[in-house]
Amino acid sequence: MMMNNSKENDKDINDVLKHCDLCPRNCGVNRYEKTGFCGAGVKAKIALVSLHRWEEPCFTGSKGAGTVFFSYCNLRCCFCQNQAISHGGQGIEVSNERLAEIFLEQQARGAATLDLVTPTHYVPQICQALKLAKASGFNLPVVYNSSAYDNIKTIEALAGAVDVFLPDLKYAEADSAAEYSKAGDYFVKAGLAIKKMVELAGPIKFSADGRLIKGVLVRHLVLPGHRHESMRVLDWLWQNFGDSIQISLMNQYTPLYKAYEHKKINRRLTTFEYESVIEYALSLGISNCYVQEGATASEKFVPDFNGDGVLFDKKLK
Image (cartoon, rainbow, N blue to C red; front, side, top):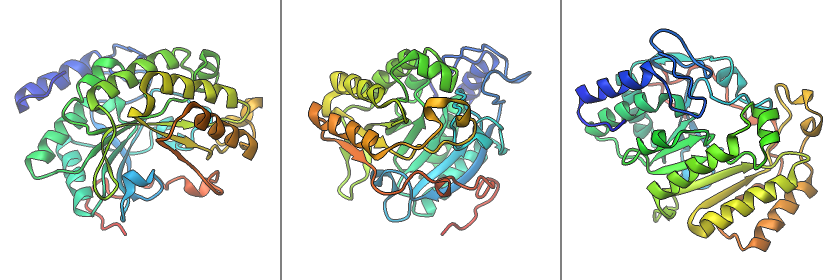
């Protein structure tokens, strides 16, 4: 799925979308005729274009990360704060040409990075749009912000197009992944994808102004009742990558959507649980790690997916 000239791009996109195997679901559906597990069709669908100030500081700069929130997802996380777009499909379809314009508009607004949120199922469209945007002067660091539930060849297709990979590593246990995200093979598949991301992006590299411009930042959301699983996630990251990657340990879990149906996670994370995971990271020797302070577990941090910036260049403050 290499992107060369425009005619070859069109052919590559058509071939992939006619038998979709971008993620480990491997639905194999012809997206011109029907949709697979995730629900995505032929055109990229977007719920919000924004300058987002709540990402890690290495992505936001003074004005924010230039987020593009894509609709649909290949996971079914029962606690998803973005379920209206990830499961419900709320959003607006755009052409690849309009997608390229959106990338350029984010740059014109002063975004520190281009942050592609939940992009896996639109990688062919994104690659073509990035090529169009770069031909018109686009030069922001491109951040691939995914769940890591990606097939390896999908990550390989992003070589030269993406500067920073921002995957989650949600679980270390198959039972957790199956119960909470309907993906029992998550850890195996995400682990392979993250290894490929590190291979392609190399060690973390920061600009003089503190932006992460190359490398991999792995996010992990600590879940209530699962602090020991979080420690196993850290074990795996440290053993495989050491300090060549950046880690972000998050305490913002909020029991939203269908979380109330699952006894262990039907509550907020305690301070003890979160701090015990931080202490474990320190005991391993991990130094490249963001942690969160204060009250971050709140619905007020959930964006308003109102379609702003999708169809026209709206001036964002």
